[in-house]
Image (tube, rainbow, N blue to C red):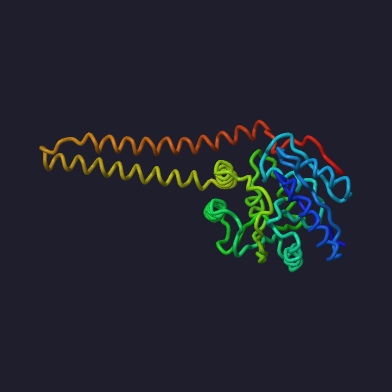
Length: 308
């Protein structure tokens, strides 16, 4: 009998987590064809989330708890769960009840068909306009920077096979990006339609700052295309500046009475100076991440484990 491991990052979910667990238990007992366990990773939630996890671990032997020493983010929490999970299939989902745990059989059936990874696809996401905009920007970023197939829909509810997990957990650098790790391991990925519910309680933990950090992490951790784009922009700017310089010299020879343009000179200086600073900042971001990785900065720090 194959085993399924569920990995759930937890943050501000003291009211929603018991319902998610109950739904998983009911569905998996109904299927009856898989062994399963559940890994709950508390990302240093400021509420009583870990107390709820502790209670659930006391009631069920197949529920495992991991408590972070500080907040490291959703993707670090996923990596911690993946490193401890030992299932033939690993399913990752949210803790807020919006991802329907009772439809996990759709993802598992798709894996049984031969796909290496399966992502849930929502016809209509029950998120705020801000979150939906963030999802669209993230989709464009992964397509441009990570080579995601345009027809592939990515979400936080997905299932992967064991060999994909083994490849993902080899990544030990300080900035994990789970989508990039899956795309690095395989392109044999499918989508399955599932419902997306409204949030039962609370609000999303993703702020604009966190979303920006996630996007930036995605395209700097697994792609050098931003550096190549910076090189292209720098080359084009240099050519434009050179051509404009020739044009200015020719114009001066043709009509010596033409006054020298202070405004155009200043605008050109500001433009090219800004471009140089932008490119230097991008290069500095890459160098900074290399420096942090060389210092072995951890992806996460675990304070406590339960049932592990």
